[in-house]
Amino acid sequence: MTLSRPVSRLVMCSVAVSALAFVGCAPGNDVPSGSGGAPGSGGSSASGGSSASGGANATGGASSGGAPGTGGASSGGAPGTGGRAATGGAAGGSNPGTGGDSGGRSGGAGGGAPRTGGAGGAPATGGAGGGAPATGGAGGGSAPPAGMSAGCGKAPTIPSSMYNNNQTIPIMAANMQRRYILSVPANYVNTTPYKLVIAYHARDSNDHTMWNEKFYGLQPLSNNTTIFVAPNGQKNGAPCAATGAGDASCGWPNSNDSDMQLADAVVKAVTDSFCVDMTRIFATGWSYGASMSEETACERPLGGTQATWGVRAVATYAVARLSGGGTNCKASKKVAYFGHHGTCDSVLSYDGTARCSATTMESGGVGIAKTWATLNGCMWMTPQKVTSGNHVCVKFPGCSDGYPVEFCSHSGDHTAYPADGGKQWGPAEVWPFLNQF
Image (cartoon, rainbow, N blue to C red; front, side, top):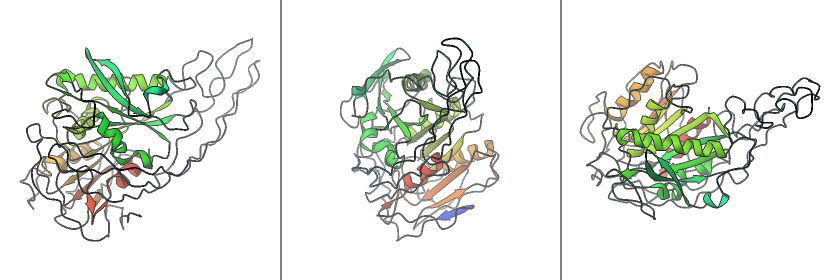
């Protein structure tokens, strides 16, 4: 089923479809920590169309020091349209939104992941087994080209039995035994730099939930251009340990930055094993997971000094500052930002007012969007607050080149999967935003 698209996207856009099936305002059970319960398990997600292969990398000159070959063209194919997005019933008392088809749409500029490994590489020098290889792969003992991870050009060190099957992978972080779930494109090529999306689950949820929901419905739209990873949260100072989907009170308190250290460890493990474009790492999440996503933008912006990696953009759904007691997240470096929030959110404030109120204040989800719009140099305007009908998205004008901010208002409750007239639209808005980079 095809999802109608917004009519105008220059500054404001709205989707013209049938009237919204109103989502109730009953509070969820995760109010004590201020984050939403886990959405239910999603249905099957149709894979997108195949992405076009990039051009071949020309190899370097002769061993006597010929000119390096330049990388081939990288005209990535447009992602195929997605199938049914992951939806679910309520879990842990929260309202994850109603089901329905979420037709994918082709992504932003660039489509599939580039097939080349960078621009050539250093020319080979004379002598047997001379200098670094001319192609962008990580061979001959040289470091990978800028932007490509250490796993490029190598066989994966994470066993194939540990990914693409809802299997948890153990990892140590902050002196705790943690875990994560990993999904790698079926046609993975170790010389292709892939995007990496970190999907943080909501409270009362876990890594298995993210697998079931196809990483917030984004995996079917990614068209085999992206590696997805779902770290698992903690509660009461200990790692969450449930073996099925969902885990009561499991979340992202980030005490002593322990959850951020988990993200560091997971990103290193994945990028050491697989070929990742280090300039295209993203974080996304709902509720408590949205909080951890924004925390990642604050602490690990691309080009920041805090770590060897950083996020290029984040996408949040019903966000509040919860990870680290609301004190850690101090945005200081530009990160592209997307957010959607229900005006009738009964768990986390839309704009600092009582739920379903028509009065606007610069706090809550709207206030966090303003923080990033201001940092990114955008021209701030209070986004239209939808009280009924279809969602409305605002792309703020004047943002620094490459650092857009977009905010979508919908008249629903606390959910990762808002819908217009029963048709979910969240993943179809989020994926093009992330895929434009």
